[in-house]
Image (tube, rainbow, N blue to C red; front, side, top):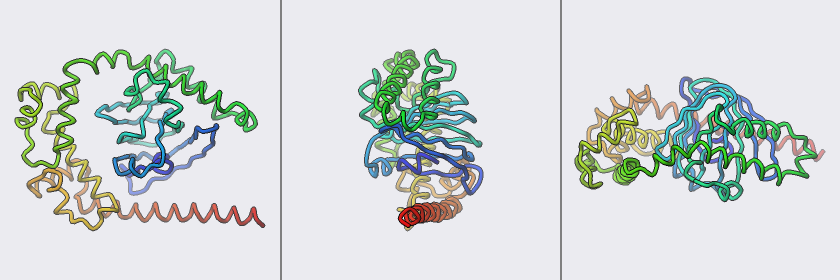
Length: 321
């Protein structure tokens, strides 16, 4: 929920129609810290949200209770209590917590952390496990920043943030060395080429294993082999990508006037009945019911925003009085 409040993104419920929780925040110089305890929910940041952002950030999330999954740049990671994940706000991502959770989120300006990263890709859905070598040092420093006295904050904020960025960078580098070897492998590079091609042609209804393999210069058999480590077939992965694009538009208030019978055809579906069945199987609701649920959330967030603005105004008036 914090990402949706402080970084343009979209929160969506998973098991209930509402999201409840509480949080507190503070700043250490240019770094914002938010502590949250909330019901399980998801947060999605897409290209439209990125374009609406005024600045770029890295979000470093220290999960204190619960478990979740982060997906960014075709990397899906599960993280649990004690783990730390990192996302790059310049790229779309999806974050989900199935059940209630507590976390501390450090929003670090891009220019503070990026120059320290030996491998910037490691910060795209990056994971620092609780049992990794340097993780205890980073967690200890994060706890110290959260509990820092305000007078110390003003004097030492730049130095403390410098230490934070240094620890995040070396932890990511330590955890990603093995992954980087795989990243540079021929198989992985071909896999990324396939993802790039499919993403750019997702709206083409003629997209198939044969057309994709031909465009990427590989055999159909090899294409399917590339997806084996992902635990799904190419066809299932393609279907999920198209369903996600449709879901985003169905839930987006900017597309409220777009007919539900038009959206799936814009994303490569050529059979409406098949789309409705697949959508319901993936999300548990028909497209129509999903839009109704999303519309109720639009009203909830508007009301919440209005109450927050009114509360701030009331405090200002009392201060002036």
